[in-house]
Image (cartoon, rainbow, N blue to C red; front, side):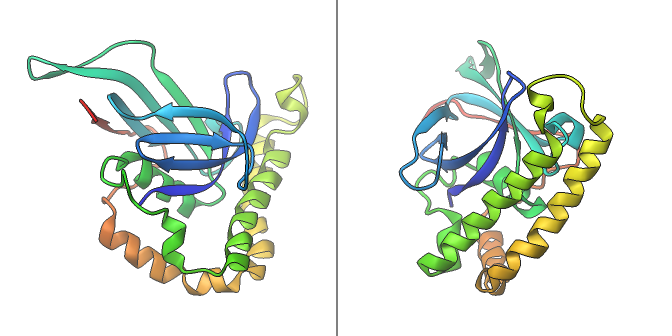
Length: 220
């Protein structure tokens, strides 16, 4: 299956933005909003060596559930994989630990799920329930963003990194408790969704930090 949902993208300019991300057909796209949003970035996954790993909160600007995706162009020569060009590094944060793991699975196995349906369609939610599902993601990230990376992205100073990270982690725990109460239907089908994904998806878990899993794609 492909994947859609809200993620925090931390760019090199020390700014963090919430985007609606769409993974499918060998591309990871970032939109300003879910419905009729403007695509602001597109990353091509094909013909690249890909590494996905979990990272500590401090490397995600104090945001919990952070992970990185590193891509570098590659080609096959004499049976060997050669990489070239400047690598691209994406640092992102998910609204929950489960979403971080789901995104890791989906990005790592993008070839297998090239034409797959988005994961959320397997939930079988009504349109209003689906709105709550994605609204919950957005609001969770919004609160974490405000707590973990406030005006510090614009100027130096403010609270110490450790204090911001602790506050962000607390926010990440508190937000689902409040918002997910409005989405009981989502909770009821969550186990069914996980079961379906386990049957179809590649087995892959993001480590807390330090380790990585890589795959090289010669052609598409």
